[in-house]
Length: 389
Ligand SMILES: Cc1cc2nc3c(=O)[nH]c(=O)nc-3n(C[C@H](O)[C@H](O)[C@H](O)COP(=O)(O)OP(=O)(O)OC[C@H]3O[C@@H](n4cnc5c(N)ncnc54)[C@H](O)[C@@H]3O)c2cc1C
Image (cartoon, rainbow, N blue to C red; front, side, top):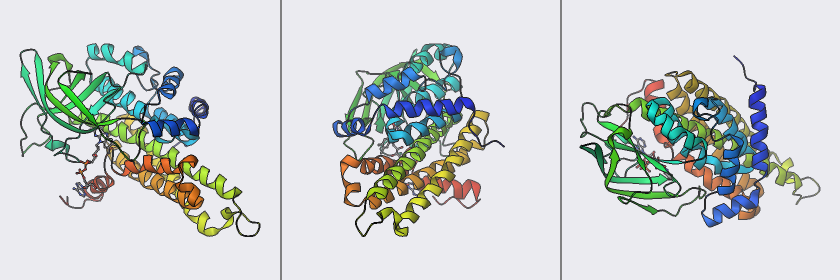
């Protein structure tokens, strides 16, 4: 068992820290206020090779594993980016990259992977209005007519619709069979924009560095050859996308939580209001931040383990990912909340940036999977307790 970073990983952490340092608090505040994509930051990340690092070398990528991507994500977040890299790191290397590199045909790999190395992003459309946490309940229908699938349905809370070149659509190619609920689910890759796809944006609490839409699909035509894997048998491909999504988001959450703690400590070390000692000397402020630090250090280990298991192709990856996702969201939201409290009124004000970290992190208890569903998985599959729903 080895717990240290390799020389390459250490260099990558330094590179990520350098890129993060080029985009300061004011930059991220403007992105948040204007609800716009961090274009300059994404361009820098693409140029650095971080966006394409996990894509196989033969298609122009760096050929590293998910563990390295998670390490880079955490370093970006901890050094000032917070959750701001979530859009590009999920939309590119995960929604497109892992889907295609693990489950695409050779022709699909050649067609799609080089573009993802250059910074193309894909929307990943799982969620539907009536099928939130229960993906097997989706009803978006794809019917094969000649050499094309014709897709009709609704998707909910789909991120990155404005910038994406493609959409990975999770659809039903045959009706729900109550005896085999996951059978009949398929994945199709469509081009964006498309005249048969209408996207209506939401305003939201945080994660404003990426757009999120309600999506209405009415007769979208997708060539038959754009199916990923075998029609109606999608479970493995779906989790080969969902697991790295959760791992990358969890790594960003760990880094963001550490950033919130660092900001709070710096502030508290400076602020003196009683006598001569700074407020950071009060145990009532120290313990919650120290507790958050412990939670995040533990979460980081689980994130790295989950990423490593993914790289090994181990079936244990799913449970480790679930635990990592829960631990990271729990610890980081707590860290950001206590950072606000440590800073008093200043913590509540936008200019210090911790309220934004909290708003962005709050999402992670809901998406990519809710913390309740994560705990359901642990109770049922790890502890062996009966399914509760
Ligand atoms: C900003 C944002 C961006 C998103 N981006 C995307 C995207 O790009 N692509 C995509 O496909 N989806 C996306 N989502 C959707 C996200 O994955 C879902 O919101 C999430 O999976 C939960 O589904 P839901 O919102 O329908 O909640 P529901 O499933 O309706 O859950 C509501 C509440 O009930 C609880 N609950 C549900 N079932 C159980 C149970 N069995 N036991 C205990 N509690 C339960 C949940 O934990 C939750 O607290 C995004 C969501 C947000 C908010």
